[in-house]
Image (cartoon, rainbow, N blue to C red; front, side, top):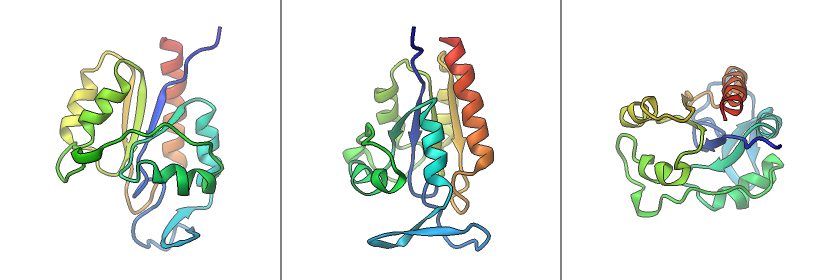
Length: 159
């Protein structure tokens, strides 16, 4: 019997594409998007995570993430959470669309802007749930990957 993998909801800006220029994080430029850069280890990190998660775009890039970033990171097209008109500034604005998407599935969510409302909702959710805030100037790092892999292992065992 094949166990179903939990979802990993991926924000892009500030998570896969660090914001700003820290200098201590070597970055690779995104062709055709000169202001966008990513950590050199991001493609390999995403491929490792895809072995234990179903990767899902949870970004205002929406379908453009599949057009630009999936090929760049060596990923197939991924499911996309559409935010549409819900996209606005404010605390936990992505939460309504995320709730509709995940329903009762276990999932982890990485974003540089996870609000308090989302954190409270996740705490009370009966299914395995991990909201992992990522510092936007650093992006997804090795420690974050470790936490996600640990969560995926535990979430898969609970099913």
